[in-house]
Image 1 (spheres, rainbow, N blue to C red):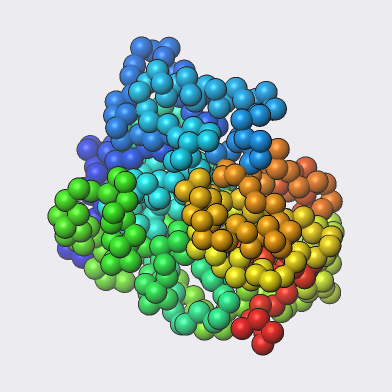
Image 2 (cartoon, helix red, strand yellow):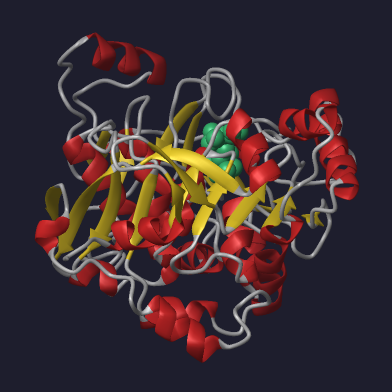
Length: 458
Ligand SMILES: CC(C)[C@H](C(=O)O)[C@@H](O)C(=O)O
Ligand code: SF4
């Protein structure tokens, strides 16, 4: 019978239960961070249980870590959560990349980087952006705190199988537009909830031509479309990325032939399909308070249709007869699990090379992992940022969600490569504008957004 990529992986992992009801699914990789793990570990302790498979569990610290003066954690709650993770991972024998460690970084960046993230796996983490790992052709989704406890104790999880949605992406990406613009364009077009109840697979020639980093950016934001899972069929690009990494399979040839069975047989196998053509895609910028409130950089901001729009405009301090180029910026943030990988930093650095930040702009450049940070220092990218007047930081979630000292002050506008522009997301009263790393870098130089697809830039 003809099947989707999702169906094929799912079937290999079902332990018990029938279609339409909760099924018990085997978990191949459980990623853990400091924010959603303290209660689950307490739960195990209180009931005298152990972690079932510490070898399939990997913990890191990301949300709370400071990105400068990293060992000096001022915030009590942050310190407690970080100390608790150290204690719990020691007691339960779970590998941990602690602050300062070579393997530390944002959980969704270090999983792939270490080679833990692999095709055809079921991957979970107590974090909504776990969808990122689906870029490898894995079923990867965020889980709640009680589910984290269940996975720690049993290495399994109860789930009702979602429906499947194929999003076919066609056309050649115009110069200086990126995967971030594709996923923002899709969400702007179809809204922030079209994916609810569906596992999304991105496919088509445009997707096949994307790097792993770019595929991760797209899958990462599936959750902003309402879907818990975004995925891309594994191919040679995937295999080349995984090969040689620390945790890659030892018999890589055998792994590759196993992984090669996982693809969607026919488009008609999806429960739902959508299409998105990128031939005329423009860089996208958010003007409002959810990721769907986005506009191409050269357009006027949309008219007010309802209270939601009115409230968003009110919060963000903009109005419809402006364009993104009219948004004056105070901060730029390049980081987060959406866009803090080496390729993202390289693209941003190329935009900044030989330029200096606009005088009114503060810039935080936050690599997703220590490995990326080290590589960027070695290659000279870090120096480009510093010469441009940016602050070059240590790895972590940073200003993506302001659970650490990196907070955007109230009323300030920030161009950000992260994934959420909710009210207060980057600090109380902060005004977020999401965009690609190239757009954010160029905006930092100009002091406002610019259309990087015009002759001046291409
Ligand atoms: C803190 C964590 C639970 C949360 C998530 O689940 O996504 C965070 O990572 C976020 O991006 O909002
Ligand atoms: S970088 Fe942002 S989106 Fe990603 S895990 Fe951290 S807080 Fe969540």
